[in-house]
Image (cartoon, rainbow, N blue to C red; front, side, top):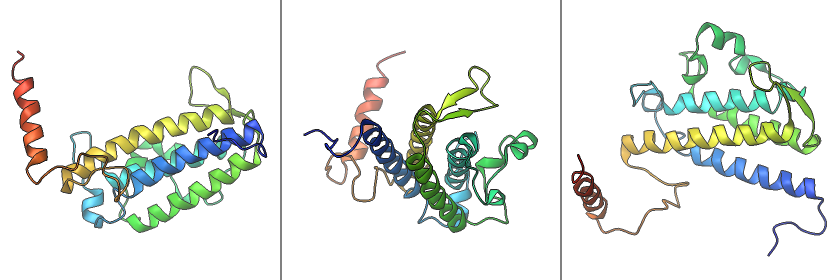
Length: 204
């Protein structure tokens, strides 16, 4: 069955699909962090310093920037997010929460950014031009490319969130109700890991 209905234009269909995948990736990331304590959400779990709360802050700033500022519809309360000038002073400014910020507050900002950017997608043609000053290869672009770029960045960071959360308590999957893992017996995961180790150890 075709996902497009006869009542919508090709562009409407494209927008609907783009928004569908944006929503899916956003929710996959947020559920990995929203039930954690402030300490656990902020705690870096890899040598690079990546942390779950910081991913939320980064993606809120990225989405509001690319799908707002760049297409001439700036986020109305810029003080809630990290301006690019601040990133120039501290390259990781958008990857961690300050002591003045809270996890719940940042998730709320991110969810409001979703509504804001989806309204922009609905209001503007996909060929709406935009200029990205920090892109050295091609500063002139369109809303369509900006949405695809944002989705790619979001999906990459959602994958990082998968690993960070699994390190904390073993929680995996796209949602709480969908682990996307086999229906293993209790010792199944450990046996699977041992199997992979045994195969890997055959090689120098």
